Image (cartoon, rainbow, N blue to C red; front, side):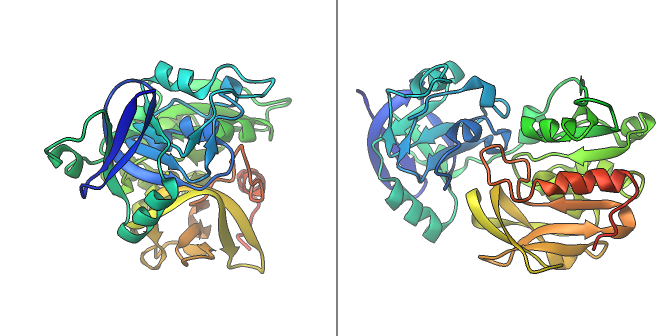
Length: 356
């Protein structure tokens, strides 16, 4: 076992034990509260540029299951309280340490993750480094920023995924860092899905005459993606649209709204979301560090809000044939309370959905 350190940008030092790749890293330190689903977390491209810390104390007990991957592993580092090096699961392909080594991702265990979580909740998201020795100069940590990540994680070429059974609709999915379960949810509803790079123009999309356009999740500051925002602006009102997470934020920006960075983000599988059109509150999976200022989106109406802090969680655009949500209705590890939103998208493509 080799000693390692987690260095926060304010100089605080946490000692732990190295596992995974034997390399140093710098990233934005964030925590996620999921009690399960670490495989999906590690393979969610929305974590690009970030060192992910799990608040649940035991990680690795069911190993790595490649069939459950959501995308490429884009995390900069991984921090856990206790690492299980003897996983027990009939579906296990390898253990967590082996996988992190394969991906070149350094990890650290034996760290007081409860204290780290308290620090981030009080201070807000902060940069950190995983390294073998405590550095004398913290400048590289202090100045780190997550930039250019959408085009880095997006697919480079388009791909077609046939509908399950009879084809009912053709959907163009703009990949800003899409999770695979978005495609699966659409396929099982009779949609043939064409996954497109984030650099695809609105003209190319409309030329293919899709029945609907899906805007995926993804990493980073939404306001940085000026090209993608402009393409969404050209698409709004031309074709039924459904946006998730970053897709929600980019749509709001395209509709004249604004976004802002949350103190420590919403990451986990237990975020309560209230539907303002009824009396329901849903438990949702979330992974985002930015939020939409609902008051600034004049072309749409806020539909969902976070029951904890009141932040905007979804917007309807009745005049533009579009709706978006901040949370993840496709969450593979659950909860699955809001998977009905894919049915709503199908209904919108059929010409229904009166946004009631």
